[in-house]
Length: 282
Image (cartoon, rainbow, N blue to C red; front, side, top):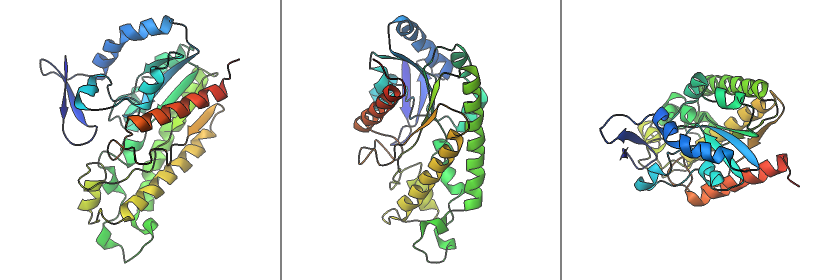
């Protein structure tokens, strides 16, 4: 039995066992191991290793009791044509993903057709990161240009660190399993909400009004800048592809940062289409 303690409106919870001890990544993977082993031997068209943050893994179906829906990776996994080894973990920073290198053993096995990587959002959108590069509203002379409210030097520093992580992972995956196609997950234009812990509250603390479109316009620029980063790292090695999810959610947000089931299904379908485009099946 696992208890998920909901701390806010969003996809943030503390997972604990019945005795109160933490339910860890190792526990989660152990709970999946038997089912994963059975699926690995079943006939499928493609094998996928998925690494990343809560866009990849929200502890479904354990989290279903708290009202959370599947991620796009869960949607793909429901399709019998795919086997997925999901090693993602909700809340993972990109630094953590790079350091733990949990993808090493799966990728070195050489069995995976695709490697899905979703990371960086907790470094520049969630986890209180906005206050690191968004200027206080009052510090900017009256301006309608969202660029003026971004500390470009600080955002560049953050993105440089994220970029180093992407390059490191891409190079390792390409060496360990040269035939594996790498799919880089891109985020949609997140929308700050009043009281939202990831964006709404940080913006409010900096003096912004959430009834003003300015915060959303700032996030729009930041997300576009992240795609520029992805385009740079895409060129590091062959077989690297960007999944562009901008304007995909269109009113189907579970919270400030994550898709509801309708949107997750749409994103999952886009991945399936891309995988069949890259590996046509007669």
